[in-house]
Length: 70
Image (cartoon, rainbow, N blue to C red; front, side):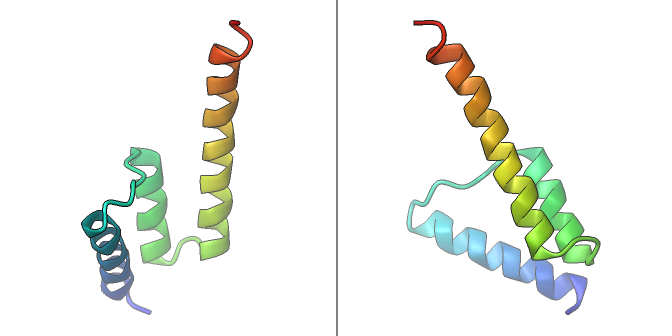
């Protein structure tokens, strides 16, 4: 799969999600991982793993800020 084709896949998926009002990840970190995937530097499994870890880290910060503060 070419880099252009992979970038088109990402753009199409994001446009489709945006059109139906689905919330989209907007972090620079995630966008850089998408570009790594498009270039073929990482596979989808790695992309997913990194994203799940990002979500876990955000959850941890949120819980520490809100739950432990009560």
